[in-house]
Length: 123
Image (cartoon, rainbow, N blue to C red):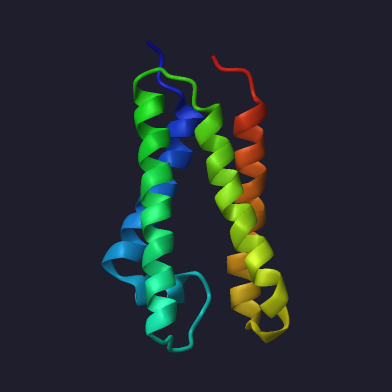
């Protein structure tokens, strides 16, 4: 049973991000480029994102460690980033430079990694 190293890395990053959004949503939000204060609705959405990232990361990790096919979880990961990117487009003009670079740029990288992982041949 071989460990899928790319899935282990991607899952670890997404899992860690999810934990950060759950434990310290405001700190995670600042890390991703938003320096503004957020209201309670935004805090709820940040925590929801944390649960999503926690779950997808955990599933990538466990699939990797068990030698299972990880392509579906890579696709879910890329899909989550695509949703973040598309959701950010209508407010793109209101975002700070760092939020655009880190938030939207990170989403683009995540989409690419998700698509790469979903279309590669399992080892």
